[in-house]
Amino acid sequence: MNAILSNELDQSIFLALIRQVTQAVPDGQSETSVTTVVSRPMWHAWCRGTGMGENSEPTAWIGNPNTQRIYGSETVVVESEKFFAISFAGKYRV
Image (cartoon, rainbow, N blue to C red; front, side, top):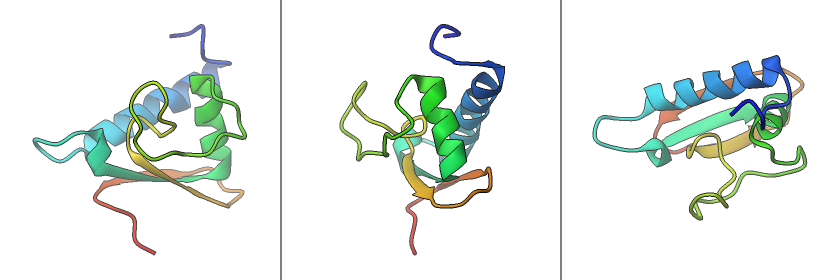
């Protein structure tokens, strides 16, 4: 795994986001049942950590390895300079 991760900070973010999504999965469901709302800088760190280009955008679920999401969760990028991500069961509603 370390070969894909660009630095220790990206590795820490990568692992923390996986744990966050995993903890939000409802009993008997999968990561695709979770939504992650993430700031642009945090999304860029995730992209670096997974080897995607920083200009990548989240996709719908199209199967591994083509899906660009935070650990399978529906991913919504928020334009903010802050560094945050929140994952929760269910769908994002504006």
